Amino acid sequence: MAKTAWIERNKRKQETVKKYAAKRAELRAKRDYAGLAKLPRNASPTRVVNRCSMSGRRHGYLRKFAASRLTFREAALNGLIPGVVKASW
Image (tube, rainbow, N blue to C red):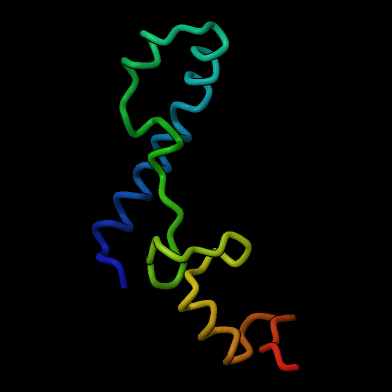
């Protein structure tokens, strides 16, 4: 499990991105890169990290399920994810 501080920091980054999204789009349309540089760093969407919704892990993240590979496997084997079955051939 990721530390709570990392998860909360990522949430704050997401809020900052939403707050400045319109302003960033406007500045990009004008090609005002000096104005973009004056915005907070966390206003850039590239600073937000995809994290597992259950464990907070950032590596091995599966976008379709919003989970890391470890929690995805555990949930799939327990039958918590509909339509996912362990492969056998």
